[in-house]
Every structure is written in structure tokens, then in C-alpha cells.
Length: 205
Image (tube, rainbow, N blue to C red):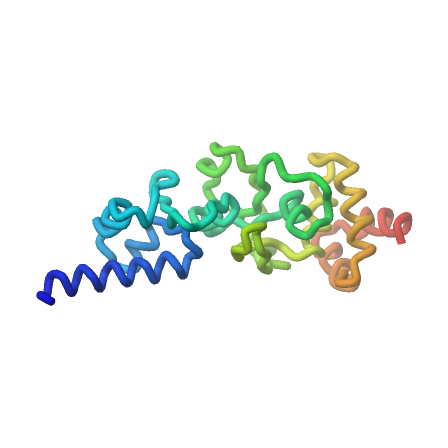
């Protein structure tokens, strides 16, 4: 094997490994960060291994597309929250029509909002509070807030949500064996939502 062929195979193998590490969905920025020439993306497309989903986003042909995973791969600062997090935790029966995400204050969210995503902003010191991971319906790992943070978020933003969604979510949460009421109350104090939370809990518990 000559040197040029060896280098080419090395890049293709490296790119295939990278694609698998990203669950079959790869972004141009991932390839650039790995110092793989972009021409090898084109090579895999020609070979029928990859196909283009949108600008800068590619998927392995034997993989399922995953809009939530793809969104967060493109916009790494987003955290799925509010009614979308309720969906992830089975705290609502409603599929999100538009995904809701939270970003740190000062983050430029114009591009995200332009594709129909509902964006909430929070000061940086509270951005990581309750940050955890969930799995999409396709089994890919994404960032979201835990149930307790999510309950506080929907209470704080209840005027922008259907009241039935809020009430039903809290009712479902109170029936969960994995609920953490002390943590919920601590978060509610931090977000200054404890009084409203108690009024809900008094009715439901």
C-alpha cells in the first residue's frame, strides 16, 4: 500500500469511528475539530455511507434521524426544558409541537428561534442547576433538566403554558416513586416559586 492510499484509509477509518461515536449523525464541525479533511465526507456520500440532512449535518444511511439529538449537536448550549422535558419524563400526554430549550443569558438564540424552537433564557449561575441527561425516543443521550428543575420551570412560566399541562405534570410528579420532594422545595426556594408550588402541592398531596 502506498503512502497516499494509507493516509486516505486512515482518514476514512477515523471518520467512520467519529460517526459511530456520534450515534450515526455527524456535523461538519466535528470533522473539522478532528482534523479530518472535509473531502472525506464527500467520499462517504459517494460511497453510499452518508447522506446530507441539511447544511453541515450528515447521517449514516443505516441510522435513524433524531431531531432532538441533531438540534443539540448543532447548538451545544441548549438544554431541553419546560414542556419538552415533561414529555421526556412522561409527565405529560402531549407531544411537543415545538421544542423548548433553555440557554444561558447572553446567548444569541436568533438562529434557534428562526427554526421554530421556543427559547428560554436564564442567568448563568442558574443555567446548570438540575442539569442532567435523558434519552430520546431513538435512545440517543441529550441534555435536559431533572424533574424537580422542570417542575419549577413550568411553575415560573405557567402564564405561557396551558394550565392543564402544569396541573397534570405536578399531579403525575407527586405519584412518581423517583420524586425528590426535598430537592424540589430547595429549587423552588432558589427560583422564588415556593409559595406557588406549595399551593399546588397542598391540593395534590
